[in-house]
Length: 67
Image: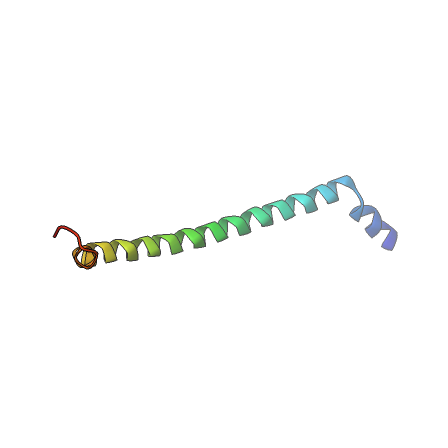
């Protein structure tokens, strides 16, 4: 039983499948992290747009703008 298990684990096909599964797992985790970062960037961009739209004239007045 142990010999059969050792032979199965050390075959080229089994090692290839392990490497392939590891690669798929890494790519999936990177895509999920990228998606999370994109969501956070969209939220930050929206906050910046809201600040610019609401307080832009006040910022210029405080900096000595022409308004």
